[in-house]
Length: 268
Image 1 (cartoon, helix red, strand yellow):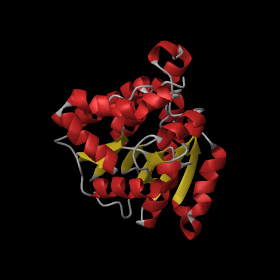
Image 2 (image 1 turned 30 degrees about the horizontal axis):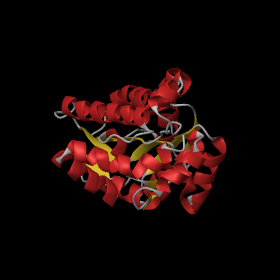
Image 3 (image 1 turned 90 degrees about the horizontal axis):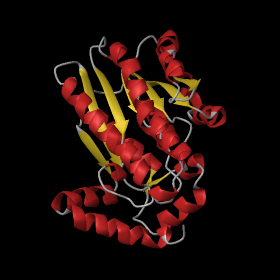
Image 4 (image 1 turned 120 degrees about the vertical axis):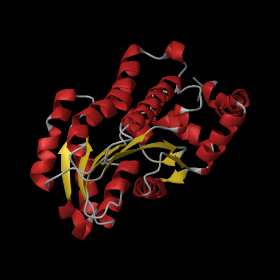
């Protein structure tokens, strides 16, 4: 589905990939309802759009709050007139520790934001999308959603849930006007660690991992995938390589990732 003249809802629009998605969507002629928990960074995104900022509306809410999510479509329609696309991009990582050391508060927070957030958004917006001539849902999973990353096991489980949720949704909607895409970013240059409260650990992880893909490149790849109605989109050489290796030999691929992360794990 071409994004020109369409209305998209983008979660996590205040920073990282989400901010780039908002800016690039309006750059391609779309209108955007940008969603984020951080009012300040969301306002910054809108200002960065310059003369196109009037094509963006800001909506401050927690996607893990189902009642707040359910009130959102009417707000968006009141401003933009319709809803043609949904990009569930918002997400957080867990503290960089083994499962035995991960508290239940952190477990609940990661699952609520990374999995239930997209579920709430999808269920809430799907009836409106089904009314449009063409519509699209894109859910951001992760390379960690198909490949185990020690120290991020619960995060990976939340993103694996997003993966299968999105693939199942695709099958359920195959005979409708709504196309569905699942996104698998590798290492992306964003501030997700800061937003998740684990900045020091993630900085070390990036130093010991693969080359980082800029958030602007990730957003471009995602939007290209949406415009092609792609089933799945891999972002970065790391995601593409590990997708291939994991299909070829899952155990060896898991060992390779462990070798990349074991020094960081030994510090916690």
